[in-house]
View 1 (cartoon, rainbow, N blue to C red):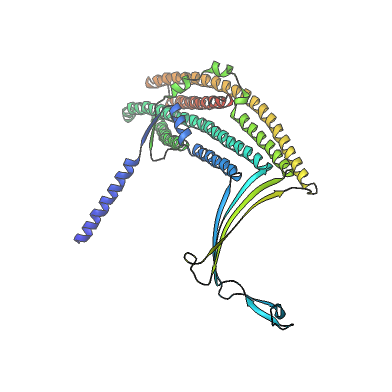
View 2 (view 1 turned 90 degrees about the vertical axis):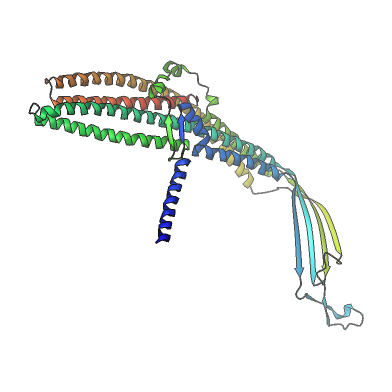
Length: 450
């Protein structure tokens, strides 16, 4: 029994210790929008993957470079002849031998060992020269992909950050609304119990209160969901806590409508245009790669070998070693391929023309995207101003309706309608803020501001 109590105590202590460790391992982060963007660029899953791709491209450059550097290899071998092979030679090949007969001879020793060092050096290969250039372009492509990922993650974080602030504002609005309705219900409870308020009116208030409470509970859940989405997009573990230090009003007031509408646009600095330019250079290198197949290839070889033969394993003591060396050149000259190489060159040239056409398409698409983004942003800004005015109007209507109800000159149904109208306009107002944040972020992407 004592052992059982000790075991239970030890288990409880272990659970409490593990819980304490788990709690200590969680962190609390505080971010402005800019800080959240910068953190995500360094820590998000997307950008970390892009960083690994850049590191991989750097290793690829060195891998290609190393092809033209000396390649040195060493080898060693040991052989034990369980039974030496027998060779037959004509009998009359030796003095006293009989013509038409054969003598059985064995050559070699029971054991042998060898060691060798081989050096190969590429002297000239057209495809190697092109390969070096292609490896550098490949690295540039990876760097541009990393920059593209950083831009994408900033856009995602901006919208997720705004989503959290909107969710929190929605929760705050519904909390205030619920508080007002609770007060109305409380004020009318005694009147209802004493017969001064009709049962239908009081039931209507109860229903309104229930609906508002349900909306508030859902808003609380949406705050946590939106925070989890932001943490995920930033590369922060879900178990950690995140706090936003920039308010929704600050985000909205930072919008510079005139500045965004009149910003200059340099298409050549846009990340999408730089990416297609890299693809164009890579495609041109493929043409050069296929043309290099017409050029000869020259390489040099050096080999040093040592061999030892013995009937005993005494290679490291008494057995003699014999060395051999040679130097060689290897020249390969393409002569005739029945037009295969020409066909490959032509295909590469056609691919290059396709990329050049795609470059023109990207250029026009970026120009069109900028026009569309500016139009969407202007519309979102107009919608925000309109919905803000509508919300203020609906709030005044609800306040007046609330006073009228308390004075007994308005019904609970009219109060419910005014409240629903207020909630609807508040929802439209919050959605217009989300649309404005999204439109501004898209315009910043189009202008290459990130």
